[in-house]
Amino acid sequence: MDNDLVDDLNDIIQKQADEIERLREELKFTDEVRQRALQSLFAAEKEIKQLQKAQVPERECWLHNNSEALASVERGIADAEAGRLHSLGDFSQYLKDKKESK
Image (cartoon, rainbow, N blue to C red):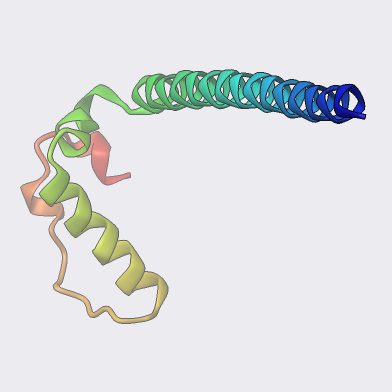
């Protein structure tokens, strides 16, 4: 009977060892998936930034490089969309290139 008990204990130990190995493999797989997902996310973010830069006219690049000015413009757009605006008059006299007034 002692041999049966030892065999049963060995079976239990082997099952636990197998379960531990399965969990290790699962964690390894999960870490690999997480790593690939992060790499994909970073690659997509980089691509988005490159596309955004490509779509910005050269004369507006300064705005995208100045986070304070960009935030101010975005607040102004949000105010205009919400109807919070008023006219400050005609500024066309300050245009350097008269074609810009059209």
